[in-house]
Image 1 (cartoon, rainbow, N blue to C red):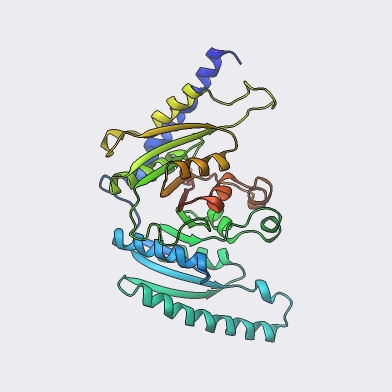
Image 2: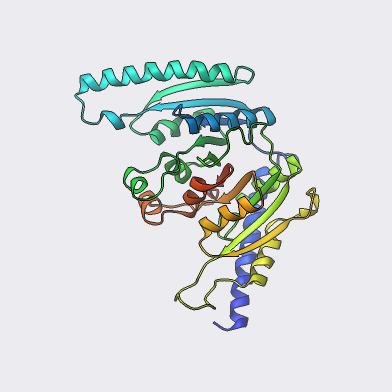
Amino acid sequence: MDCARRHFRLWSESLRENVVLDEARGTMDDQSAGSLPFRKILHLTDFSHCSDAALILAAGLARANAATLSVLHAVVPDAFTYMTPDSLAAAFELQEKWALGEMQRVEARIADLPHETIVVQGGDVWSAVEPRLKQLGSDLIVLGTHGRTGLPKMLMGSVAERVLRSSTVPVMTVGPAVPLGLGGDGKFHRVLLATDFAAGSAEAACYAMSVAQRDQAELVLVHTCKKSKPRGSDKGWELSVAEALHRLDETIPCSEKLRSRTEMVVEYGEPGVRIVEVAKRKEADLIVMGIRNTANLFTATHLEIGTAHNVVAQAPCPVLTVRPRVRQAA
C-alpha cells in the first residue's frame, strides 16, 4: 500500500471513530461534566480474598458516587454435577445457608450505604446474574478475579471473563496483583486509557475522560502497535509512532478541561503485556479499555485468549472494561 492510500485509510478510520465518539458522548448528555453514570452498582462475590478486595472498591465507588450497592452471590451446581436429584437439592440448600451467613458479614461492612444483598441459585453464574442485572438497573458491575491464565483457565473457563464478554454495562475487575484497599475511597489519581482505535474505543474514552474530570486525575493514553502480516519484517508495524500519536491526540476531545496535560504513550509489542508494563511504570490506579462484542463466546474466550483478560489477570490496579453500545436498527 502506498503512502497516500495508507493515510487516506487512516483518515477514514479516524473520521468514522469521531462519529462514534460523538454518539458515545450522547450516552452521558444528561450528566454534568466530569460525572459518572454509576448510581446502581452490582458487586458479584464468591466471598474469596479477591472478592473482599473488590468489595472494598465497590463500597468506595458507591460512597463517592452516592450510589446504591447491591451484592450478589450465585449458588451454582459446578461441584454437584454428578449428584442425584435429592442429594443435589440438599447440597444447594447447604451451600445457600453458608452463603447467607457470609452475606451477614458483608452487610456489616456496608451498613452505612444504601444496599441490598442477594443470594440466588442458577445453572451458572452469568445465567443467575443477567436477569438480576436488568431487574436492578445496574450501571456498573464490580468483581474480583483469581486471574487464572494458561491451560487450567482454558479448560475451566473464567467467570470473570464470561461477565466481561456478556455484560451490557461496564465491568470493573480487581485482579490478584491489585493491593488490598486500592481505590477504597472510590477516587483515582492517574487513569490509563488503553486504546486500539477499534469500534468501542469511543465509549471507553468517554468513561476515562469522566473519571479524570471528576477526580481531577492525570490521564495517560496508551496505544500498542502490533506486527502486521506478514510477520518477520522490522517495518511490518501497523502504525508509525507519528500516526499513533495523531490518533491518540484525537481520542480525547476537550482535554483542556483536565487538571493536567494528557500524556500519550506509544508502545510496540504484545498489547496485554505492554499495557500492564505502562500501568506499572506510570503508577496508574485505574486502567480503562474497550472490549469487543463477539457472537461466539467460546472463540473469544478460549482461542483468542483476549488482551482484556491478560490485562485484568496481571494489572496492578482495577480495570474498567467497556463494551460498545448495541445500536438498534431504525
